[in-house]
Length: 208
Image 1 (tube, rainbow, N blue to C red):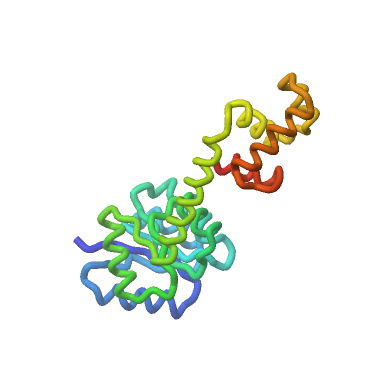
Image 2: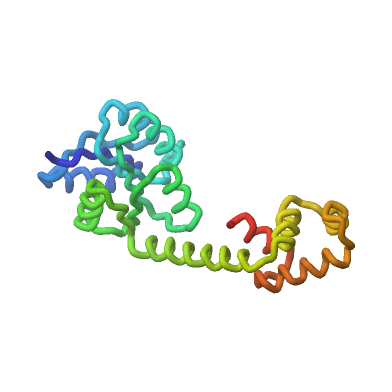
């Protein structure tokens, strides 16, 4: 059985190039191609392809939003992002929306074919620099988690109150301690988390 695919790409030369390449490969069957997310939303649930190659930047609705909506009616269809974007925000948005793979448009046709086969077999293929980016972010988050775990119970309480927007005076009243004690705790929190201010400390609370 061949792997059935659909292609959502607004650039005609890219869409046609992908279609022509996969049409010549017996391991794949191209069910249809779409230039807009709106077209894909209507037809993909009927086609139920194994894999959708999805661009992010489309004329109106973007590819990430399209995936979120199509996933509801096609839970077994897998999505491969195929895009020029490699920012942290776009990568995470795409993966959270339901994409299982992420390739950049500078990937060669054979690399794309290998990635689709890997995806179909349960893998999560990504361009090398995207994979490294995710690993680096994971490592940074692990460091942040370790730093927050070194805080005492009282310091974590104060950090949470800071994150909730309370002023020093309000924290002191809530915890029945003096303003000076609150300032001492916050100074130690900044030292332990290696941050310079309230905003940086709150960002690490959010990451946790």
